[in-house]
Image 1 (cartoon, rainbow, N blue to C red):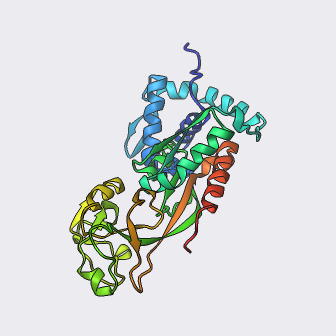
Image 2 (cartoon, rainbow, N blue to C red):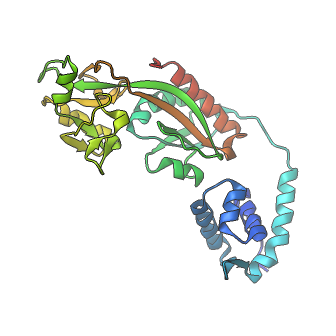
Image 3 (cartoon, helix red, strand yellow):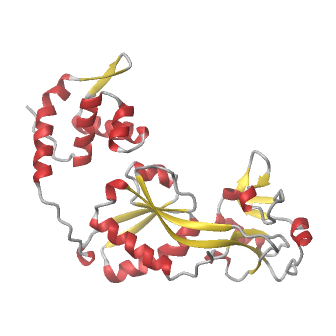
Length: 299
């Protein structure tokens, strides 16, 4: 008989036992507090590592394979043993190794992660940061990222959210190519350059909650897919670009505010409940919180 696969971790074993109990991807996802795609992904990895389908379709649900029935008691014994082990709450940043994957777009990345990297160089020199901008909230539930920085946190019971900072949308322009707009009409008559994230492709307008002139529909002249495309298009033009005021890549441009318009942008830190008791993740959360607290707050 093949020895038990020691490359499996506790989360995979827990998922296996949950599937044995529910025989349902949906109920297992609810039980573990993760998304169904994450359960499917984890099950496929488990199948590959154990070289067995483990569960096969039967009517509307699943039934375990003979191999799954054969190993379930051993998995139970392993989990009971792991549950009996004392938890170590000690975390020494100076000795920590590995990587930290943080989901963030360019704005959040440039605002906080350079300072985080500098802190890690001093406190945890063997930890490295990887920034991942691809659908970070879903990746958080799929265990592909450790933390997520986002302006729009999910309303999910399995995701913890901490408000870090508040920024205010401002208008950037090239002072070599135009004067500062003064009146509401000046802003309404202007040509706009915007990042895709605030553009509504269904209407062809800037999203209402990001409209440079509150209460008015504004159609942009140019839309770019990332924040990093804004400076090159704005430089040498008379366009205006509505962006978060703390956007670091906009140094060298002038900025101004629209009369009677206040669009606030909150920055949130999100982590999955599985990391709520993780000393490493709680240390990192505290560190990011202190970095954000040192930023000017526009609330």
